[in-house]
Length: 94
Image 1: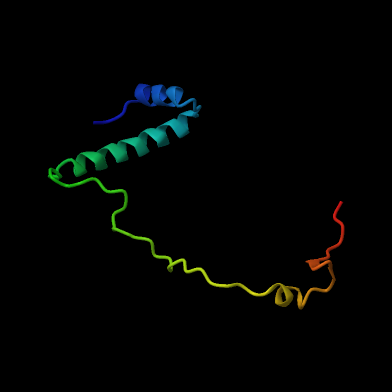
Image 2: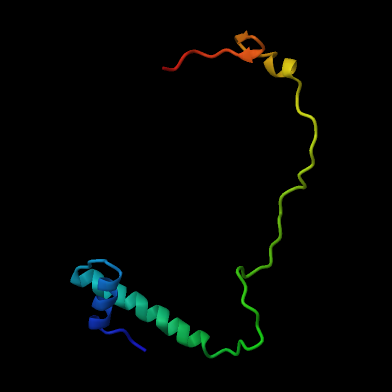
């Protein structure tokens, strides 16, 4: 199946895109390549194959979220250049 120039113009119109003649030819060529590839894929029997989101089955690869105690309040303020009432003191921005 090949896309004609008229079909490419209609697709561009429906997509609310405007193309010059050269861009339209490029888009038509790209779409024809995609359709050719889809025809090639249709040759394969996929009956009984479940659809997948990813080509490779991945599970959560991050580490377990284990709660643990953080640093103490005093240790957090230990290297603070300035502190006031047990909080970091920073310059006024506004």
